[in-house]
Each structure stands twice: as C-alpha cells, then as structure tokens.
Image 1 (spheres, rainbow, N blue to C red):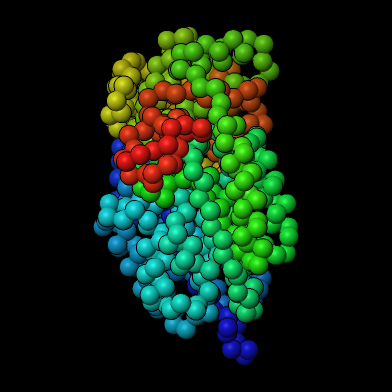
Image 2: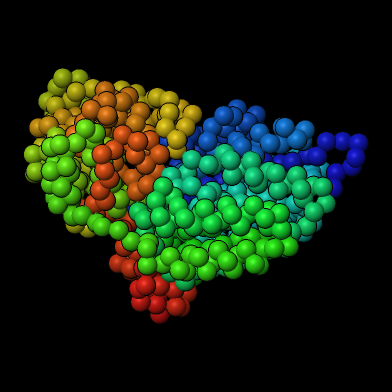
Length: 501
C-alpha cells in the first residue's frame, strides 16, 4: 500500500498479439513498431494521448487511474495484426523495453497491463505468462498486478498465478475494450485498499470456431448474461469467460474461466457447467464461396439492405493475410453486384497509384500468402478511386481510431468493387468502404474479411449475414487443423473427437 501522504504511483503498459500458429506470416519487431491498423508503438506521454478516448483497455484503465487521483505512469504500448508466431527478436526486445521502463519508474504501488492473452512466440508457448513472470521477478510477489485480456485469450495457469486479477472483454465484437480496462483498474483500487482475492480457474474441454462466438446471438449471448448475473454477487467481484483463440497449437489452447473473491469457486463452477451444457449450440451453417454468393444474390433480389458475407477463413483479425481470392473469384463468376474488402496487396495498390484514377490496369491481385487452394486473380480492373488510406473509424470496434491503411485503391471488375489496401486490418468498420467512395448501405452484397468484429458496424445495415469458407488459414472448423500439441482429451470441435497426441 502507498504511504498515506502521497498518491499511489501506478504503471500502465501493453503488449498485444493474437497468434495463429498455422498462419502464413510471422510478427516481426517492425510490425509492432508500425502497428498496422492499430497504430504505432508508443511510450510515455505519447501513449497517454494515443489511447485517450479510444476503445482500448489501457485507455479505460488510465481514465480510472486519473479519476482515482493516482499518479499515472505510462510506459510502453504496442500491438501487431494477428499472424503466425511473434519472432523471438520482437518478443525479447519489447519485453526488455517494458521491464526497463517499469524499473525507470522508481518506487511504484501497482501495475495495470493490457495484454491479449493468446501470444505464442518462436521460443515460448505462453508469451503473456512469460511477461508476467519476468515482471514478478523484478517487482516482487506483493506488488498488485491487474491485467486486461481479450475475450479470445488462451488463459494459462502461469498467467493466473502471476497476476492478482485477470479481467477480460465480455463482448464479441469487442465493443467493451475500454470498459474492461476500467474494471481492471477498479480491481486495482481495491487491491491498493488492502483487499486480497481468492482465485478460481477452470479450463473447458472443447474448442469452437470464432464464427459462432458472437455475443449478439446464443449460445454466447446467454452465457455472458449468466456471467453478469454471477458477477453481480459481491462475493465474486471479478469473473471472466474467455472463449479462447482456437488456432494456437499448445496445451493451454481453449476456453477458460477465471474468478476472484470469496465466492470465486462457486461462480467459476456454475459458469463452467453452463458453458459445458451449451457445447452443442456452438455451431452454424457454412457456405462454399459460390453457393454463398448465389444465396446472397437470391436474398438481395427482394432485400432492402445489403447481404453481408463473412470471408471468415481469411480474417486478418485471426492470423490471415487478408489476400485470398476465393470470394472475389466467386463474386465475378456468379455475376454478382457488390463490394469486397479489404484485399491486402501493397504491390497492387502501388501499381494503381502509379497508373492513376480512371486507368484500366491488368493485375495479378492477391494470394501473396500462397495459401493452398488459392491463386492470384488475374484480370483487368478499372481504378475508380485512390486514397492515402487515412480516415477516422466510427464503428463500435475501431471506435475513435485514426486508421492508416496506407496507399489504397478502389477497383472495379464488372459490377464488383474491390478495396485494396497496403496495411493489414480486418474489415470491421463501414468507413473502410466509405473512405474509398463506396456507400456500404447502398450495395447489394458486401463481402468482409472478418469473422465477427464486422458485426459491430455492419449488422445494423445487414439484411442477413452468411458465413463462407474460401481457402484461408483460420479454419471455420478447428477440427480440420493439423494439431499436434493440444492437451489430451480436448475436443477440437463441439461434441467432437477428443485429441490424442
């Protein structure tokens, strides 16, 4: 506890990555420095200003810190687009800098961290557990540490052991990131006041595709309503259900529950039973690309709003490179009218900027990540619009972020418009289309490279939503992935066959 004659001095920092160990591209140090669609690595006062008013857990936590009258000490904050493993070089350099800045803060009373919870590196299965272990070794066992986690964290026993409280998002799409940070900081205030919290931890023995994890619909909607009911009991002031990121091949992959307080064990057990009872409901219909496009065209004939198709297996928010061509190929083959985005292809975007607006250009578009079953889409395109890729996001997920997609182009082939960008980020905000001159509300069909975050901004304008499985690294059915290292007995799909090494 801080001395009564001074403000509590609390350190804030963040290092986030969601790792798809089956993905095509590693996350190098430069990817965290640039940050992709999430913004550049920042330190100190630059960090404070970057996250102010933004839907980010660290921003919400610092907001509470200021309200509590703490001395808020921002250290380092960075994130990179989900991908394959974080390189050893990136992890070691960033972790070392974070520890250096914590040490430079001098005498402190607590640490609030914003981590993802599903980071796997080239040399470590549990990136967050390792970060927390190193911080503990530096600051000691008694200093309060609270952590905000993504709903898709693969929570490990080491993470639970090293942190006093793990507080996770409760919405998918993640529209409550800042609110999660606020909850984490409020738990820090209680720790500073001298409270200690018993811990409970449960791991659930099945994986489920992220396409069926949206909290807009059951079963997840009902499970988080159950969570809110349980956490309203003062005996359990913190309760989290992490649905896990089902593309990380290590033993602690999967769903987990953490609870804190004298009623932690009871709350964790009740929520675990509810999750297990809902196992069979974590499934839904999946269309092939051409079947999905034809169904969308049928619905669009009488619809008053766009039909939205999720190109879920190339979701750059889950380790895809946002460059597979399966859905574009289907749109063109079926003679559909609509728009698709974002296609991450910096070379094609540069060629378009060189050719200029109004030009017709022949491109071998996309497929740079060389996903099996995919190939570049070779055709002539009309360049309708060119931009620098900068715009303010207004939807619930990216809310308040100044996006920088790099040199961008809107292409047209037939009645299909194609958003091509130079920075990888999932299509989760209508401004991504609108900034390129496409009013998304007026399109018949919208194809988005996203699994669920798009729902925050696109569901209100959608006639219906279809899930399509074009080639990509984020399997819509986790059971189809070539697992080798999961814990024995974990079912790789709801009611599926237990994994055996």
